[in-house]
Amino acid sequence: VLAKYDDREIVLVSSGAIAAGLAPLGLTRRPGDLARQQAAASVGQGLLLARYTASFARYGRRVGQVLLTTHDTSRRAHYRNAFRTLEQLLAMGAVPVVNENDTVATDEIRFGDNDRLAALVAHLVRADLLVLLSDVAGLYDGDPRRPGTRLIPEVTGPAELEGVELGSAGRAGVGTGGMVTKVEAARIATGGGIPVVLTSAVHAADALVGAETGTWFHATGRRSAGRLLWLEHASSPRGSVALDAGAVRAIAERGGSLLPAGITAVDGEFSAGDPIELRDETGRAFARGLVNFDAREIPLLIGRSTRELARELGPDYEREVVHRDDLVLLAP
Image 1 (cartoon, rainbow, N blue to C red):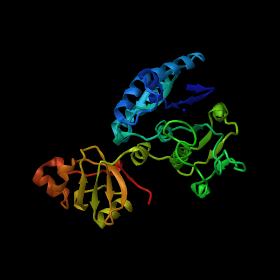
Image 2 (cartoon, rainbow, N blue to C red; image 1 turned 30 degrees about the vertical axis):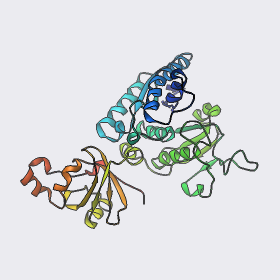
Image 3 (tube, rainbow, N blue to C red; image 1 turned 90 degrees about the vertical axis):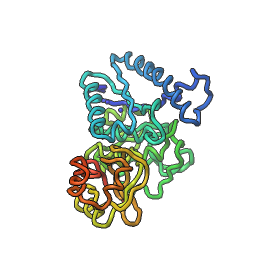
Image 4 (tube, helix red, strand yellow; image 1 turned 180 degrees about the horizontal axis):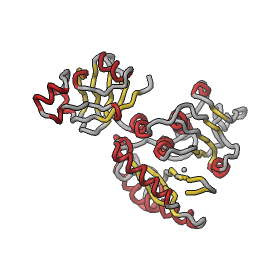
């Protein structure tokens, strides 16, 4: 959630565009195919923003819509543009209302759920706090509908959630999310240094003023390059390259870039700028990065030095396949 609440800037990450478009299109339920979901979102986005505009206007607040796909945030230039837009809206006193751009998002470039989107937007705007709203009062140690279950008031690390029954997606909230996605969103945010409050929607004001409510997730990591978090948690790899042991060590242990000499094989169809997986000799994906070459070019590069490639193919080939600034190591 970034408008001012007292002296706080609030960003609202909202779902509901597809749901808002169902009735005007004569649909009684969320369609299963992507084309009709996109059509519903196209109708619903305007209706949803109109409701937010009217609601915030009662309190003298302006809103601005920001629609994102994973492509907008994993690529460096697009990431900067998204950040600048949100920053300027806040500077001008508007409330950014962020949603996934369902009208153009395909299965390959979807965030998957708005809880994950909220965690990543929190990193994008360098938030001090992420508030996740549900239809229950917080995280419980079991199904909250069962007698004897207990609200967990705080979580200091992932180990404390071992054995906690989260239930299936859709148990809490509406749409595509659920308690599972909310806890995963909390893990993404806290791992990057942002604390999280998970509470019910009726207690949103308490969370914003710092009152005790719901479940508090303590930050477990340090703030890091937000764009790389998007690359790790929101991008869908379009292919992969296999590396020899030396290249794996250079990347995983010494923070190096991926050079052509370390590649042993390529798989998939991708273009320069797409996210790909980097795989070790066992086939395990240990890193993800934005590739600088098309898939069809890489067989020409395999096992060769950049100097040799530049001499034979020209100076455009004297560069990394994946630069270290566009690469993130994956958790084992």
